[in-house]
Length: 253
Ligand SMILES: [Zn+2]
Image (cartoon, rainbow, N blue to C red):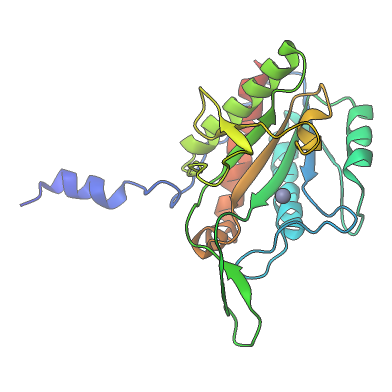
C-alpha cells in the first residue's frame, strides 16, 4: 500500500513544464526603475518567423507575449518598458536596435519561439489546412552571445542565467538542446542557457549588436501541440512575465 502522504505528494507534484506559477516580485519602493526594451521577435520585413503546429505565426506569438510582459513589468512598478515594434509596423532589426540603444535601456529582452527537429504534417482543423508538427523537444531556452569584451559578456551571462533560473523555478521546462547542435553551446552554470557559437557571418545579429545586456528567450517549441496549448493560457503568460521580472531584478543586483 502507498502511504497517503506519498500518494498526496505524487498527486500534486507538478510535472516539469505542466504547472507554471511564479511569485510576484517584491520591488523596493525607492529602487531606480529598470529600463527594459522588450523586442517581439520577427515581424521584420519579409520575416514572420516560424509557423507552428496550428500554422500560427511566430511574430504573432511574440507580440502577444511581449505585450503581456510589458504590461506586467509596468504594473509591478519597478520597470520602464519600451517596445521595438507594435501593431502593424515591421521595423528592421537594425532600426529596432538603434531605437533601443537611443532610449538608453538597462537590458534588452527579445522574445521568440523555436521550431525544432523533424516535423510531420497534420490537419489540426476541420478543413484541409496542413500544418507542421513535432511533439518532441519541448521547453524554453535563453540565448546570448559571447562575442564582445569580457565585461559585456559577463553581464549578458548574468542576465541570461538569472532569467533562466527563475523560469525553471516557475515550472517552465528547460529545453535539452538536442537540436541546437552547431548553433549554440550550453552554458556551464544554467541548464537553460545557450551561447551562440555560429561563425560571425551567420551568428544572431540581435545577440551581439549591443553592449547593453541582451538575451533572446525561446519561449517554447511552436511545433509541439501540448506546449502551444499551454502558451494559449493566460496563466502561462502571467507566470512567464513574473519570472522574467524577478530574473531582471536578480541580474540588476
Ligand atoms: Zn524566432
